Image (cartoon, rainbow, N blue to C red):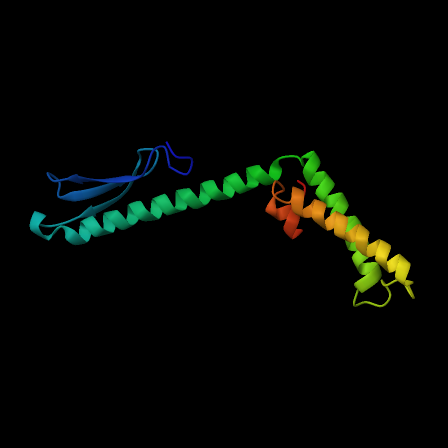
Length: 148
């Protein structure tokens, strides 16, 4: 079974004796009924039942995706993720000191040697961030991670 596949899918069944399509949810409970008058004119009822099934499957997938995202974010930070946060904060301080648009954050009158040292260190940190960025959660990289 694929990871994204729903174990028990919603389904619709035809009850020809009662002239109705019955839609069952993922728990096997009746969700809706779509009656029709004649078998030869049952297409609207069948289409409505099919739409109900699609909507139920869509809602289930959305709920499971949201739950899996919450589960992923609830995990504690790994050592690499902690390292990423620390290195990024250091890199950001150096960036602000050299290139910030806000003059109050910028260090005044850095000499060329200091600028070169800062730039070299920022390059090393950026290389490390690129290296460990492959295994770090996207929310950490984007800066949207909120510890729970």
